[in-house]
Image 1 (tube, one colour):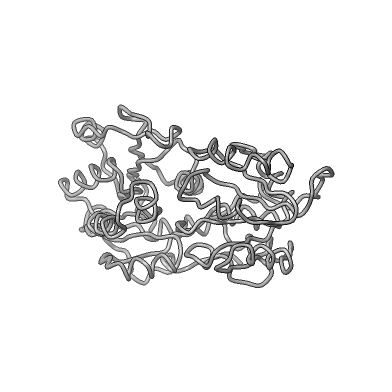
Image 2 (spheres, rainbow, N blue to C red):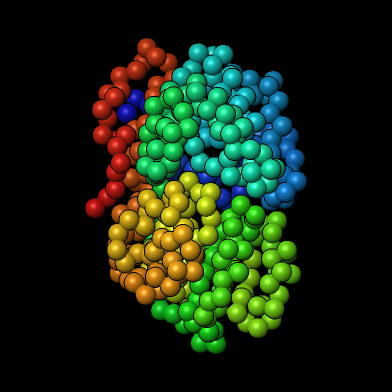
Length: 362
């Protein structure tokens, strides 16, 4: 792996706040501390337009001439294409034209997103994703369940694990200090959008108070739809929150609720566990891979049942201990170990490289 020191990174998401950019930011930070140089091609280098649904998201207009100009002087040791968007497509085309081998990664369940946002049949989304990743030398995926799903969907490229980590300096247990709030506090953190299935949480008749932290196209609608709960003090919308205030909100919760069925991992699950808070979720990919030991939460087809079980069995010490197994150092090892030389004649990687295997720190 030591010979791959210059890595070309092509991504359609860069400055937004989401699981992909969080993963990129921490992976690049750790890798650069090890002397790895990254050359990112991202939307900020192109003319852009806002997403019509998610106004905080901007998409690049991937002008081929601009892309070729950016790549003209680049001689990467490895090429990784992060996303299946317009820049990913154009970057893949240019890599093939230049004779570069490349890896790709799978972050987003476009079958779910296409169905909920565009009424697009999942089979069409899977067909597109298979074609996009078919030319990749390796496809990186965040959990064993997602790797198994991609196999079942007919992905032909070799599949490798690239998990996630957690910032323990930001997310950690704190004394619960809220005095005027009815407990238990059930917390949701994430994008407030249709595919996140937040209504499944807000529709539940639960004791205590519900907290919703995040912004997105459904926020105004949910505030209107659940205004009676807001007025009664049973529900609080905080909007987008970052940094120390976000860490404090996690630690204040009694249970973290993860209603999404479309995640490939769920970074927020690790943030909750690191804060000593058990997690309630549906038994879907992502939660099933993370919530794998006693005391860290509960999975159930009925979300209300999962919440009650998580409150009854959750243990702050078990949550923290489990979260500490996930580090950005281990995740970066997986990422770097899965890369391949851009030029076949420089390939000296061993297919049995242990960095490609599932790795946690003790």
